Image 1 (cartoon, rainbow, N blue to C red):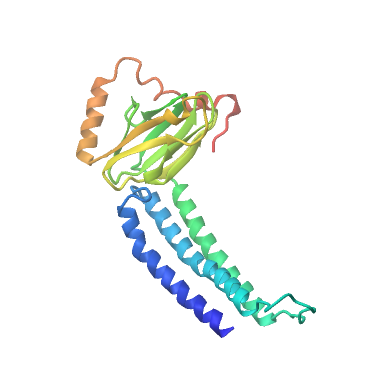
Image 2 (cartoon, rainbow, N blue to C red):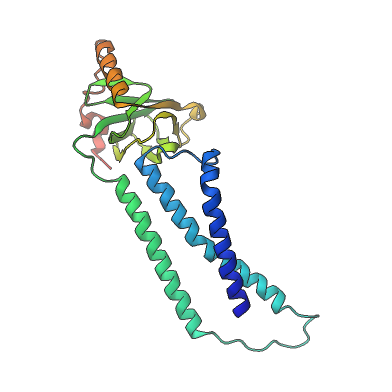
Length: 262
């Protein structure tokens, strides 16, 4: 067993080092979305830990399988029954303990990331109601009673999103911010995220919702506090009569008869 164990350790270390070396290069090259919020940063960390922990598991399976193929292969067509093989109690015990520890670590890390997404919004949070319908997202800033078809956010300002739908099921997703919530008629789905990188991003619908589903995208623009304050002031002065109706719509009207909230 010494040879496959040495191969397992060496290859695992080599692949882990290669992953740590290539990961920032691939991120900079745009191989996966830029992390633009605290939630996305947490998800990147979780995925890195998951990947690093999965490398020795994957390598162990491949190395021991490949070693067995070459070390124990038959030199010809077998003419007799092979020797009986009995289990190794110590090896099984260590494998069970290692598996339990690994799964526990992954559970704790994943649960912590989920708790961050579902944490209560701080008192200073910006409140944005996301209303989906075929085939557009509309955003109501309930703190200011204004609406917009483009999602403007303030840098480093926590945001509480409340997501619902007026017709069929949709899904509100900002890949760069690591946030995704179902938009369900009669229900309100709430989560908190803090944008931490200036830039232009895209909201996408991730639930098949009709013939124009693929076109159901809107822009997300993260502004500096000064620019966001200027935009808010401009919008408050430009809202036509009746434009604040949705912002003032009572929650019960959106929930409908079901009265559900999730």
